[in-house]
Image 1 (cartoon, rainbow, N blue to C red):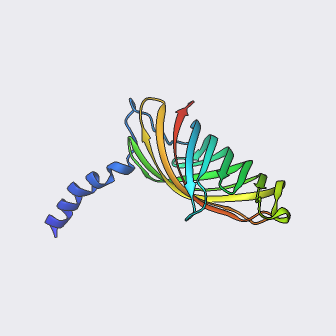
Image 2 (image 1 turned 120 degrees about the vertical axis):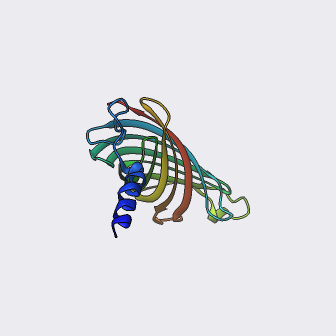
Image 3 (image 1 turned 90 degrees about the vertical axis):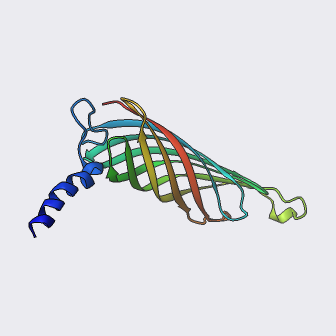
Length: 188
């Protein structure tokens, strides 16, 4: 039994490296009170549906170690037989489930309110032509990501998320997987 306790005493500190706080020369990147500004660009798809491009600026504030709330904007554009755009703003939250010295893994949830614009041009059917149909609606998202600390104040992230935008009058539902990369700057 003593050998088992000794083995645990030697192994447990090694296993907890990913959760340990960085040393004084390397302040905790995900600590309470941190303010982070970031920008992500991405692309998405849904089966044979058109490709989507996105631009997402964010401003994070860490409420607790490893938990942040962000104000974010979102611009999405999809093109095919139709042209779809969404411009909105809202809140998201992240919880960092793995917090290492340079690498972190997070889960994110968000809700935005904005306006979608849908254009459809069908030269074979005059009645099916929709041009400039606009709707105000909510968009929700959930995703997972990885963040890598690239310098004293810089970090790079990659994220995969699912977006849900409900169907509105004359516009289809927009439910897509989105992948993106981003760059963050830690203000403090």
